Amino acid sequence: MNNTFDELRQTIELSQSIAISGHISPDGDAIGACSALAMSLTELGKDVVVILDEYQENFEIIPTGGLIVKNVDDEYLPDLYIAVDCGDKERLGTKAKLFDETLYTINIDHHKSNTFFAKQNYVDSEASSASEIVFQLIYNYAPITADIAAAIYAGIVFDTGGFRHSSTSPVTMAIVSELMEYDFNFTEIYNSIFHTRSFGEARIMGVALFNLKEVFDGRIVTSIVTDEEIKKCGVTSDELSEVSSYIKGVSGTVASVFMYEKKPGTFKVSMRSDDLVDVSQVAAKFGGGGHMRASGCTIDGEANKILENILLEIEKQL
Image 1 (cartoon, helix red, strand yellow):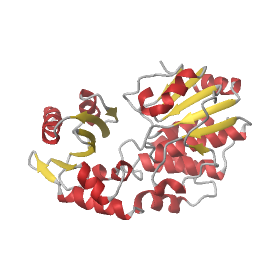
Image 2: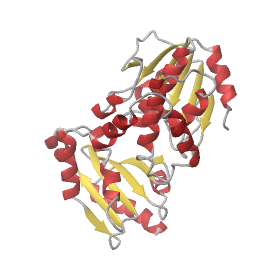
Image 3: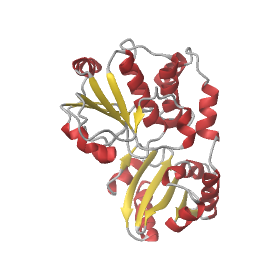
Image 4: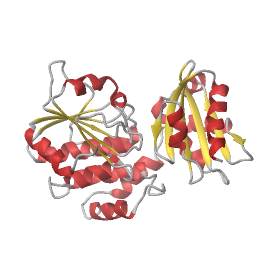
């Protein structure tokens, strides 16, 4: 079902105006991959725009080439639309309509649950990140500048959790080694992504930790944060992204389940795990997806009942 890089490059050659988008609530990988691809195609003389939602302040360290916009004119219709780091078309949000209207479409992703929704697709679930795939696509095809290298590095370092996740492979590290030959401040990028947070983020992390519970003799940790608690801390859902990974670090834990209320009665479930639990299977049961060690879904209902159902699916694997 996959196309080759050469086939994707041929489509790029046929296109002059190109739109690129990542998923809603873009993270470091979506921002880095989209920006790097856009800047490299601009170097080839293409007219490129990156359409992305607002994102967290700590990701502003990622070079974008000034190519990111929040919206485009109603009359805008590119020759090619490239979706990056989206497991399905719905992850594009409101941008899915323009994607459908575009003649050529490409889907570049690394999620095992990807639905191959574009006319051309390149999905590698073994890749650490979408940024890793973008590097492979543009290597020896388009120029790589220091800013492009920095954007790819940022995406890889984010999605590997600073090279801690099991998705980090020898290929990943070889690419990072190549990127570090370019003149950019990789330490500053790393620290901004992992060690910089807003006051509100710090407060909501405290709430999540206060609500922390153990189940299955401490093998699973869970936390639920309500809409009221989120509003009290003055944060957005984007500022909750690190909670699930953080609580997974509790000693003796094989998986974490973090839930937060997106709106009354609707909960986002974010799961992290080690080799004993494939959380992508759990997420898929509830219409979500992701990776074996990091997945999520959105469920309507009562918080404790949702958590009970999630834990039942995890228990089957334990």
